[in-house]
Image (tube, rainbow, N blue to C red; front, top):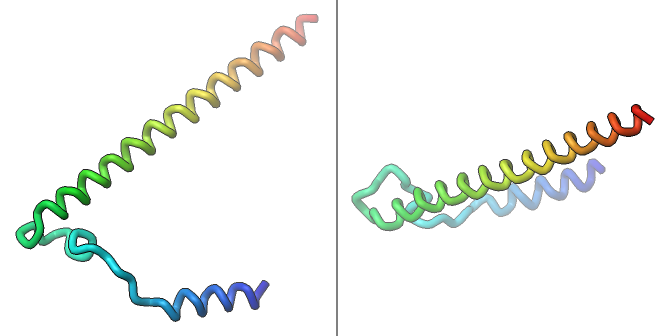
Amino acid sequence: MKTVALLVATLLLAHHSAMACVGCRTPMVASEEPQTVMAGVAFSWSVITMLVIVIAVVSGLGWYIARTCQRIDRENAAR
């Protein structure tokens, strides 16, 4: 396990240069490329919106499953 961790750490440190678009490198500088920055902001909000929708759906399903299990337990206890 230590060998695998060492290998992964070595590979991650060997490739320390990362490429990023102008909007990601300098998000506070809106005068250089305002369209890129605004596209990045819109992308961020779309990701947050999708995450909220997924969390709401999973929470709703969890609530429904818990309610159904409680109902079944009540019905089985009455018998």
